[in-house]
Length: 124
Image 1 (tube, one colour):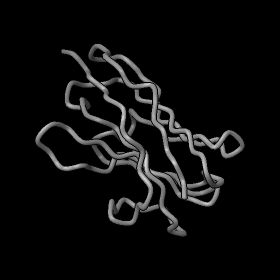
Image 2 (cartoon, one colour; image 1 turned 90 degrees about the horizontal axis):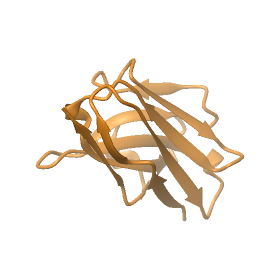
Image 3 (spheres, one colour; image 1 turned 30 degrees about the horizontal axis):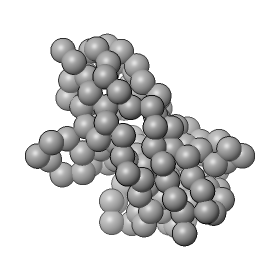
């Protein structure tokens, strides 16, 4: 069992930056590939970024590529999402999730552990 807790969300102006953190407890995070998903009001939860167990591979949605960076520190049992050049359309609740998949995946259904989410609001 893994418990995930996100933090770092907030209100930021267009063009600003935020860094989200996802702290894990229960089991070593190094056992899991990790992902960040987001859900805007009235929309389905969508993939944003993923990182492999040791951080050697990453994947990004086209909508965030070049602006967001996912990273991890397994010694601290924490995953990060650095978000730069934020746009109003990035406004959403952001969730981190863990998958036991051997490779990184964008498939929401393969993630078994989820955090409670953190709100990110980008004002225009």
